[in-house]
Each structure stands twice: as structure tokens, then as C-alpha cells.
Length: 373
Ligand SMILES: [Mg+2]
Image 1 (cartoon, rainbow, N blue to C red):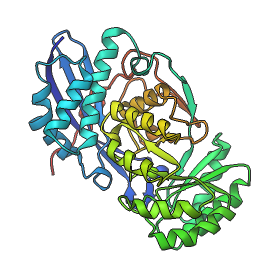
Image 2: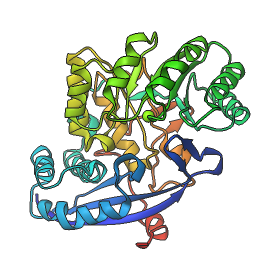
Image 3: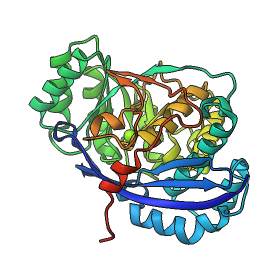
């Protein structure tokens, strides 16, 4: 089998007004992502999604489109799509960074391999699939305290038992967590995600109060790259510290683990540049007895399916203990696939069809294509 073409589709999907995200990274109201489509001489097609947000990886749908068109797609043309690992290695040799663009192509390759063999991607990654469905936490934007409390309560009534609250946005951080705690009661697990929005001194000040409020996990409290700050906070924290923005690559993970900077690592295919590197990070973490969870960039259904297959395949993605948020489609106005990933309250079903198990609705994609600025 040979790859015959690689196409890219920059698409715009607004978030539902009630689900617009606010964090220390800014506002997320509209997703402008890149869908990719890889064709083969046997008529089997694979799809992928680059969940591009510049404040995460420095990528936009336009940079992803350019790097794919000019650098990565030429490497793939004429190659056997089943050689996923060596093709990803080639992509990494010609181009540093750009993890979401590479992940989009890698998930499309896995989609082809799965469709050809009649197996879901999770079974290709690990024939001993660990789970077929899993429970998520709800990720709550850094809204004013009253609104945060109201949304949290509504999500708890919808079945969520873990709420992640965005913090790192200013003086309302603690009032927000407190309002949510008062609204949902003491039985619900609360975690916070500062997206690197606190300096160490501030995080140290917040810590006792967060612990009093029963917060059970602190995600990326201090800026990415400042591993010493997470290490220092961890020395005094009585709750686990999770690295997210600090852990893009295997090298990042090695450093964080070696210097004991965190108790949990957040991994996911887009951020880590593919399913293979995400699995490598989770495996390395397991060797250090550090559990992993799955993070999110508010993906559409294609990248959400890839995340679900990762969770299904990887024993060290300990989502029962540290639930992730594989809920991107729930935040968006409409799906771009005919068969959305099945998400019911906190429960996500891993798609069971061959490949990623989602079929892109190209008419909807075409109707929502965007033109270069
Ligand atoms: Mg995070």
C-alpha cells in the first residue's frame, strides 16, 4: 500500500456559548483547527486533526497546513502508511516542534492501518485493551465565582464526580474554588489547573487554602519550563502536582521524572506529537511509578477519538484515579463527523469501528472551511 495524497482542511467550529473556555492562557471561543486526509492507492483513507491553538504549541491551522504541505506530506507520499513508527521518525528528523501537525498525520496513518486490518486503533497499540469506556472530569472555565458554582452544580447533577477548575487568572481564583466547593459539597473531587499562571511564591501562598478546600490535584501551577518551581512546591504540597504544559516531549518527561518535579503527568496525542510518543512518555512514567492522565485542548471528534484510543490502550493512563477530560466535542456547536464519539455525561465510549472509528462529514467540513487571513 502506498500513500497517494495528503489533503488539509482548515475548519472553524464555534464553542457553545455556555461552554466557552477561560483560563490563564486566555479565552477560547472558536476552534480553528486543521483536518487532514491521507489517501492510498488501495482506496483506504485516514483522517487526522491538528487541534491548533497558538498559546499551547505555537501552532495555528495555517502554520500546521504550511508545515504539512511543504515539509511533512512530501515525506509521506509514495510511502507505505503501515510504517507508522518510521514515518513519524522521518517527520521528526526534518522538522522540530509542531507536535499537533505531526500528531494529525500520525493519527491518520493509524486510521489507515486500522481500517486495513479491521481493528480499532487501541487494539493496534495494545492487543490487551485496558478499558472500553472511561469516566471524565468536567473542566470548568475560570468564570466568576457565582457562575462557576452554578455550572459545577449542573455538571454534578449530570453525573460528574470530579470537577477541574481553571485558576491562575487573578484574585477570583480562591473565591471561585470556594464557591464551587460550597455548591457541590464535600463528596465531589475538586482539582485545579492554573495553566502555569502562578509564580512560585503565589502558588506557595495558595497551597494551604486550596488544601483546606479539599482540592485533590494541582495541575501545572507554575509556568512551563520552570521545573524547579514545581519541584519546590511539591516539597511542601500534601496534594499531587500534575505537569501538563511542562510535558510536551519525551525529553521533558525524562527531566520532570528524574528531578521529581511532579506526581502525575498529563499526556495526550496532540501535545506529545502523536500516539507513539504519548505512549512512550506514559511507559517511561510507569518505570518511575508515576501515573499519567489525559489532558485536552478541546478537540473535535477526530482527535477525541485518538485520545480515547490512547486511554483504552495504555495501562498507565490511570484515569480511574486521575480522570482526564476527553470531552472536546461536548464544548462545540456541531460535530464534523457522521458518528460522533459517544459521550454521555462523564462517560466516554472508545469507538469500536476499525481505525479511529469516526467518519468525517466532509460536507460539514467544506461548509465551515476558512480562508487564510
Ligand atoms: Mg491542563
